[in-house]
Image (cartoon, rainbow, N blue to C red):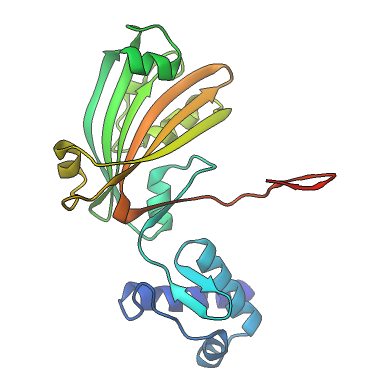
Amino acid sequence: MIQSQLQKVKSHVLSNIESGKWLPNDKIPSEFNLVKQLGISRSTVNRALKELTLEGYLTRIQGLGTFVSDKKTKYALLEIKNIADEISDLGGTYSCDVLALEPLKADTHISQQLEIKQGTPIFFSRIVHHMSGTPLQLAERYINPAFAPNYLDQDFHKVSPSEYLFSQGALTEVEHIIEAIMPDEATRSILRLADNEPCLIIHRRTWSKTMIANYARLLHPASRFTPSSRFAPKNSASGIVA
């Protein structure tokens, strides 16, 4: 019963957002008004709004109310998720274009990133990921064949690179480095960027025990992307360790 009422509240809010009745940054009706309108307890309405906030659809500001979030994608920095699932969670439709899938030899930069000898054979992919037809991420991945020997044989229209890599073995460590750049014309065209619009890049390295499994450059239009994280700090005898 409670679950169905919870879903009723969430469906009501999402239908107003998806129809365009409530636009990004609009203030939505108060909990009190939603209780009267839907005939559902305030505790259930409160829980539904909290869940929609965690899912990225709403922003709650103490003392001001609850607002429709903008449409920039929030990217979790402290975990690796399948981008197809991330887009689905945001209510979008996932698709991709595989621009390159080929063997290469590691140049100086890539050999340093993968901690292998220069000239070592590696695998490379360049894939643009779309959310409801709009480019959201250009992913360039350099794969250590010792970790994923069949990487080049995969159909990445059916399985995402992250999903495939998860299946190959435990990823025990992740490094994320973020920078902003002005993209070149080729990247601007692929991501359909406005003139002078910057990109945010996440440089990601993942380890499987002592081996660096892959190095990725994940390029995002700055107007469609927000890096974020949420985590529980570790407790110590002297308090919170930040």
